[in-house]
Image (cartoon, rainbow, N blue to C red; front, side, top):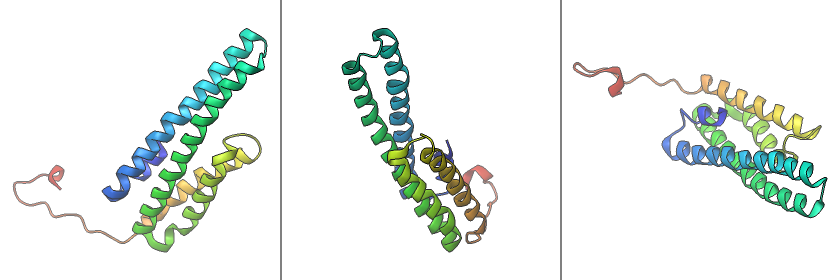
Length: 153
């Protein structure tokens, strides 16, 4: 998952809450797909569109989707914080695009047309945030002491 990878170089105080939020997005948004896609589709097929049951299934899916998209936003806020801490102003373009897309995702999801552009924005923002890390402050690698290995760093 892109969010998980983008948090790899973040300091631990940003990495772990960000990864928890990324996990929440994957779990809850996956739940939305399962409930709204699989369950609601099955109910519609079996009951020929009986709205009370379908409405209840979509209500559960909506709740899962809102929690998942909130987790998506939270993880991306932490990705932006880590990118800004690492790359300073180089992170600004990716941060702006990623945060705008994340807020748009709260209610557009992936639906045409806004949701499609929202997902393109999220991908572009994550890409720019990743590239900004190449412009961050140079860090010299830790020295390898005699008797130690690269894994000990």
